[in-house]
Image (cartoon, rainbow, N blue to C red; front, side, top):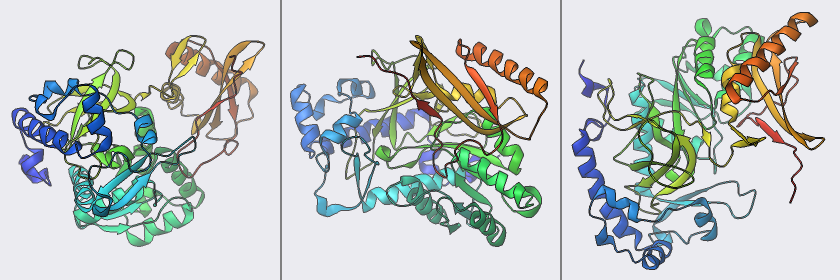
Length: 437
């Protein structure tokens, strides 16, 4: 196989590890020098007695202090900019539901590079200019909309900016426009399939869908396989975050053996979230990213709070960009119940193993007589009034959950449509516990 035919940017995607690391140190040194135009980073370097010329190797990145989301909030709105505001052409921000939002600035070059990164991801999984790409993400401040829009356009595909929600319209567009690829959050894909079934639409027979880009919320391998089986497509995991531009940071190749993170754009570190020291390859830790080609607002050693691990640095696809596991959760949304650390993705992994269950579930945490408890409500795929069979199913679900999370939750099986449905990111955890000060 001629691997280079599978590359959109062979001059970067086909680099050897040695060539990648050489490019990274060149770009890191240039980025650090550029960061001295930022009042935040200039002060941060002065406070720790560090100078740009002290960064002589990739290992020297550990001399640089971490950047956190709180730093972005404290410097709101433009205190971390490394260029004059007159050079910036767009900003994106978080919702800012608690305190200041986080704001990310972009120059035109930043937007061009972002589009290139997303186009590279889509090309990697087989999309070409003759494809029709439908984007079901929200547009506006959420980066998933515009990020995939401009990436698909850069690739040359016909784009359908359908935006979020309105499942009937989404299905009509898929059928009428001959959509071959779609981007959506996993929970919405399952909702879309349910509406297809209600409308008598068979995605294998009645559509041309072949590729799904899924991301923006944690999902298990079991859920991915279920999505592929439902729609008859290949579903590729995507990773992005607004602080790193948005989508296009990491993406699976056709091997589906981990997310390739583009190391010509980012330096990847995995650290222990408590000690902040590097962890060995294969061990789960917190993802830390440094941007390497951003003009408006480069970020050095940004703590993403996402938990993952290194799977490898080579791949049968021919790329040598680091491969990371799907995100296992976040170091700041971990559930601590009776001293046990639990991530919602662990519970989803078990639920998706039961064909009797639908895709919607809700985890509720409560305090009952001074004891913290967990209740897992999950919808049944089909109506079943056999009480004995349902009791047996609940018991088996509790047993498998206990094996996975080391605690026995309450399990409630409810009819399909009983739990709240979101057109955006699904709300999976509701914490009603009493907090004692």
